[in-house]
Image 1 (cartoon, rainbow, N blue to C red):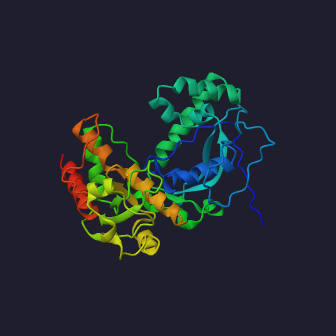
Image 2: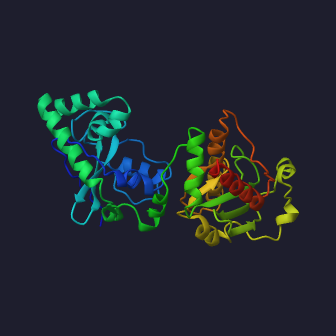
Image 3: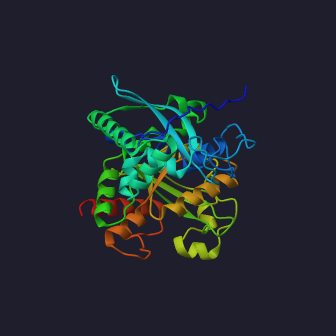
Length: 353
């Protein structure tokens, strides 16, 4: 039986102020970027279908115009707005739907964010125009919304994402990612807070050695190590690659074809690898590379890539050092396990300021 997409209409446009205890705790925080893009496509927020979409989602109705479901604005790319219902007796924030809306409506709903961006007046003007409200009506609505927000912010709500199960399998919803906030380490103090927070979490540190860089089409993982932020070795192994290891790559990490000719393949070890990193908060030094090469290797063997919330230790270290250039990993040895330990040592150092 095909899935049916239902939308909860929001009429009129109104403020949705998330309780302070629930900031950052939403659908986007617990699913991969690829699956979020798939939801955006399915709900009509974009016409661009994800290239490698593995979810069983219904096609959007492209006979209908691509427009904001609130004000009717026509844009090429809309925001996918998460709709919430609050139980103020049991303190539950429940997901009840998703709808595509324009940036102006999204900004008007989240007036606190608009304030931060210096766009509060623009957001209020849009609120008045869409609802045909007077300035006084807008002021009253904003006052009531903030009073309700202050009351709700005094309590800690639980997140109910049961509605999401009809679109995203439970195995692809990662509530553990909510343990730490998604930080952007913009300066030294941000980097210190990033390190301290991750050391208190169940995050893991990942490092790989490979047959080449991502611009090499045959690049694949030949060594992978996973260590917890408490220093426990979760996984450490080498793999026999499908293709020969280029000489120029061996010169970097010292691993030859003879070194791995009797090892298991990545595919043979796939279940153990998934167990150690799938759904984890994963820290890597230059995370885009490790993420990319693991996905490339999974693709070579026609395996589903693990879903992690990746955190880049190099980005944080650059902020910590207040440096604008690429920085090599201190004490890095081009050995997966040793480099995991070097990243952990670096995070502990940053946490101490």
